[in-house]
Amino acid sequence: MTEKYNFDSVAERLANIDQEVLKEISRHMADGEKAKPMSEQEKACFDILEDVDHVGSHVNGSITNKRYMPNEIWLLLCFKHAPSWCITLSPADNKHPICHYLQTKTLLLIL
Image (cartoon, rainbow, N blue to C red; front, side, top):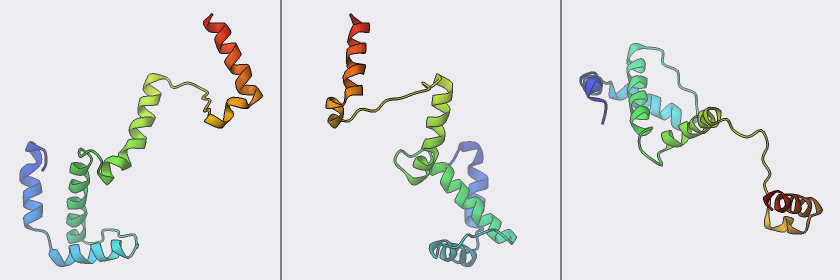
């Protein structure tokens, strides 16, 4: 799955990828090492991984989609002018004096 204009280049890269280099990169990543492309074959493998990430970003619930969510939330908050303060009340706060004060102030504003 890729964009129509990009299909030929992605198909060519998939057909010409070096399987041994890809296995080596995946082994390093599975071991928790940070892999960095050094050769042209490794750069081609990382381009394939980038294409997979691009496709995964459009699939709801995928790891890549979840990785992009904080950026989208931040941009949405900036666009909609987020409030400068927020109060979270838990059910146990109903006996707290500050909550009673805020509740009475809110009721007075509504009336």
